[in-house]
Amino acid sequence: MNHLLQMNNVDTRFTLQFEAKKNGQLLREALQEWRISKRALTAIKFDGGMLTVNDVERNVRHILQVGDCVKVTFPPEEKSEGLAIEHGDLSIVYEDDAILVLNKPAHQSTIPSREHPTNSIANLVCGYFQQQGLASTAHIVTRLDRDTSGLLCIAKHAHIHHLTGLAQRKREISRQYEAIVHGHVEQNFQSIIAPIGRKEASIIEREVREDGQYAHTDVKVLKRFSLGAEPMTHVRLQLHTGRTHQIRVHMSHLGHPLVGDDLYGGSRLQIDRQALHCVSLSMEHPLTSVPLHFTSMLNEDMQRLLKESSA
Image (cartoon, rainbow, N blue to C red; front, top):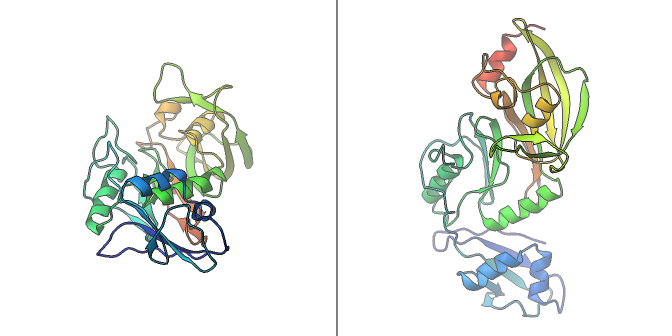
């Protein structure tokens, strides 16, 4: 199957091109095999998209022949409700016509909230897309808490978001984090499998609870050290699920809250945010299936803690 992404000055609508491989197949069936969602087909039909076969507009009941050129033109997207178009600096690690990988600083929200309505990554991405002339909005693939730094991925179109969502459900998008936690973690490697749910009487806080959602985190010790009289451990964490505050909740549950994470028992004496950074992101490109791997160095505040430490 060949994919060709077409973006030009005349028509900024997102377009994919495929080659039919079966005689007598309904266009609807081929589109399903090409992972075009029913929601996307509805939008194409009613909101300004188009399906063509050999440059002739067709409906989903059209019968294909081997070698037919099928073009799927998606309707232009409108900015999501709750997002504003803002302009500012984005630390771009990778970009193509389908995805955008950024290095998010600490103290910046991924999406706007009531407490922090401006300067979110999503708002800035909307402004960036506007500058590029893209008829799209920000689709967050991998989200980070406001005070967590590091790599995050954004889809440039709803269909790409659909494909990355399928990949996430199959656990084909891998993220690794590094953190500095209180105390000396005893085991060099361990898996934390403990369900996470919302803490009663709190809209923000999560906790390990029997009726929570399945959550799995692998923890590897990189270095045990002390900062003054305070024992700490530098750990690498592999997420197998993506629950809200998962790493923070699991490490607190283990008895080793993240340094700086005062919501879950950490101290802010040494750092003014949870010492957590997404250091790597691995995935297959949603259109080409080419393996992609991105890395990010720890923020200076976490590097400082490690440099000031004594083994």
